[in-house]
Length: 98
Image (cartoon, rainbow, N blue to C red; front, side, top):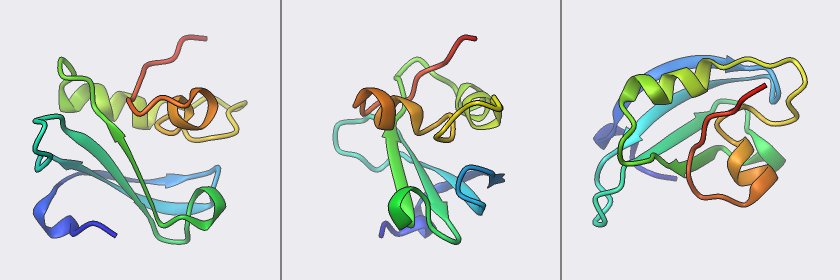
């Protein structure tokens, strides 16, 4: 698991899909210069994983990331921040439209 003490805490929220509290961090230490969203689940997320990470598009602000985190749609199998990775195999966050 990554050392979250070196990351910026963005927010905390309850993840209803995994019935777990989640903490959201921005990791800016990647050598490529690409920021990553790192999510740490208290009780475990997809298949029991304690952590999830996805790249943040370069033009996104922290508010764009928070908007994805807070996007709530009742029919999603995965939390919004995991949909690009789980449903489409994308390593980057993306916005969703109804």
